[in-house]
Image (cartoon, protein in one colour):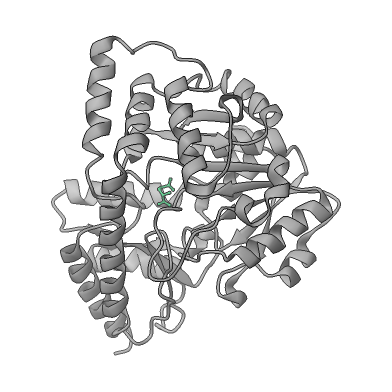
Amino acid sequence: MKLSQRAISISPSATLSISDKAKELKAQGQPVLSFSAGEPDFGSPQAACQAAIEAIERGETHYTPNSGIGELKKAVAGYYKKRFGLEYSAGEILVTSGLKTMLYETVQMLAGPGDEVLVFTPAWVSYVEQIKLADGRAVPVDTSGNGFSPSLTEIDKSITGRTRGMIINTPCNPTGAVYSAKTLRMLADVAVKYDLWIIFDEVYERLTYGGARHVNILQAAPEIRDRVIIANGVSKTYSMTGWRIGYALGPSEAIKKIDGLQSHLTSNASSIAQWAAAAAINEAEDEVERNRAAFERRRDLICGLLSEIKPLKFASPDGAFYIFIDIRGTGLPDDMEFCRRLLEEKYVALVPGAAFSAPGYVRMSYACSESDLKDGAASIKEFVEAQGQ
Ligand code: GLU
């Protein structure tokens, strides 16, 4: 079988493949605890489900405008105005089949062969692969020496004449870091200095804990509006991962181009899911806060339990729902081996840091029940302690 170079060079999503493997083992009757894919375990909001049912009953089961229904764009615009004081018109918003598609389309529009895009590592699995799919080059900018926040020194070393843009993700998957207004201001200045695009992925913006506060980059640097594409969606905020609704906000010229690409790719996102997403944004605010508070309790619980396992090192995450653990003190050769053996011996699924361009770490999602967290932590403790014997 002859395959394209592109097909050969792409690595499948580690988050999804590990979660599929965990599901497969579970289906075979194994007592698997999966902390792999980041997926809230709460039900989708009642208002969203009801809106979907009503959309079907009204016959909203056909193509919608390629860029999304007006009602959802209005909900998104109203949300951005209220939450961040940012004004976006319908022509500056594009609804997509999940945030992943939105990011793919945006990268395709902003970067071509040989173009470089800065990715702050540890970084979510798909950024690097999506840049590769555009024949571009993902340039990793390591944040591990700076509390998982980008530093100007590291960025300066990475900029070349081919740099086209950067992807910012705050709160960050996998580290849980929440970038300060000062950091965002610095990144905005870099973008202006070198004439770069910014893809600003804030899909975890509602999930911050303790004193941490999420800042949108345009609150820190309003004057760079024309070079920022904001990426968001309903999956994490409203526990609506399966509905596949993401959206982009940006200057109309760029949005129009991305819309054009989408017209050859997925066309509109699911009509029914779009109605559900609009209802979630307009009506499910109470559930957002309730779920956030539950994640914060879980964060505190898992941090407490893992801190009893001495060879593991981690910082308590300020946002998202992942804990990123340094396993280099455990005596195991690497993170891949750590995850493979933990799954085979203890039936606990974590994602190796290598998937996030950060070998030596593992990612644990705490978007699951407190009892699973307790059982999982106990198994990890047994596993790690057995290595020292
Ligand atoms: N974004 C989530 C994660 O990192 C869901 C899976 C994926 O799309 O990567 O686990």
